[in-house]
Length: 173
Image 1 (cartoon, rainbow, N blue to C red):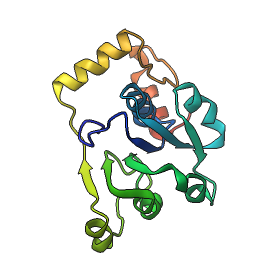
Image 2 (cartoon, rainbow, N blue to C red; image 1 turned 90 degrees about the vertical axis):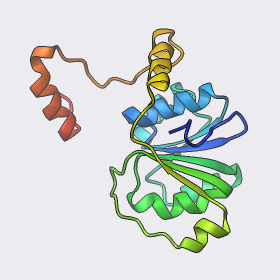
Image 3 (cartoon, rainbow, N blue to C red; image 1 turned 90 degrees about the horizontal axis):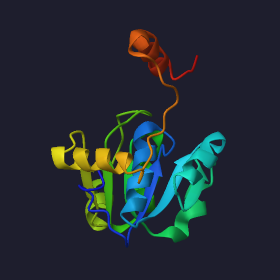
Image 4 (cartoon, rainbow, N blue to C red; image 1 turned 180 degrees about the vertical axis):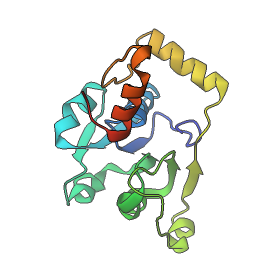
């Protein structure tokens, strides 16, 4: 996602869902590129996101989150949430900004006024497949402890079915 959005050290990246699996990786990988990171999460998970290196943490349950970060000049939104946040995520992007998406856990259907897209010179990219070289780099970053995966729980292979059920329900034992 960050490669497709061409994230650089001059960017400010907004990551909705920053405490999830993909979101937490995005926070760390954007920081590794030198970008400023604004992380959106729940108040209960803000310390986790802070530990990952986020520069600013905003509550996704706050009705004033847009006002809280208006001054930040968001150049990239790296979104795995979608849904009802879509309109505000697009509005918060600066002119020439980039929106990259690899998920829609809050809903896949959104509405876009095409004038917003072309008058503000926005770039949209979708991302589902990681190139082999990028995947190898991520593995190396983990091995070198440059980034750390966030694990909710570890299961032996013999408990794979249990792990899947818990994952689908988003609960823990």
